[in-house]
Length: 186
Image (tube, rainbow, N blue to C red; front, side, top):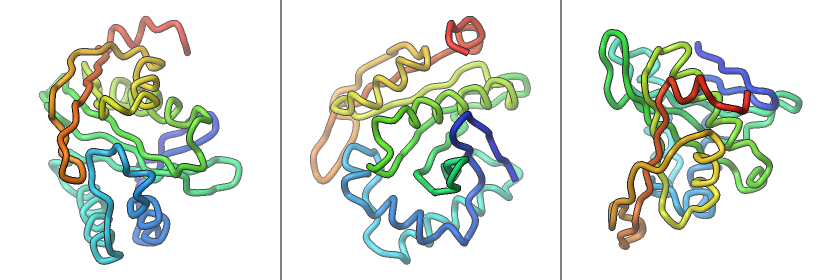
C-alpha cells in the first residue's frame, strides 16, 4: 500500500472503510462544481467508483493512482487526490495529477501541498519525465496551485469540458522533471 507523506497531510490508498467519507466528498455539488467529474447521486454509484479505485491498485498495468487525503495531526479525511498515467515507457512517462478537497479545507494551502507531493512522487519514485494538470478556466484557485508548483501554462482549450449541460474552457499546465529539480521552493 502506497503512503505519500507531506508536511501537514499524507496520501494513502483508499479502502472499503472510506466509503462514507468518499461519498460525502464526491456527492457534494459545491466541491465538484468546477470538476471535470459529475457529482455522484447515490451511495451505490460511489461504491462502484471506490471499488474501481481499489481494483486499480491491484492491477499489474496500473494507470490510476487515487488516494485519500488525510490530515496528519487529527487523522481527518479532507479530500481526494491522485494521478492518471497518460504515457509510460521503460525509463519515462507522463502523469496527470488532480485534487479535490472538502470546502472546509479550501484556501489553507493543502491543494498546493498535495500537488507538490504528487509531482515529486511521479518524478522521484516513478521516474516520469513530465507531469501535467488541468482545470476549468473559471477555477482560478486551481490554476494558482499549478503555478505555485512551478507548472507552466501549455494551453487553453475552448469548450473542452462538459459540466451540467454546458461546455467550458480548460487550462492545461505542465512541468518537466529537470524544471522540477531546478525549482526555488523546496
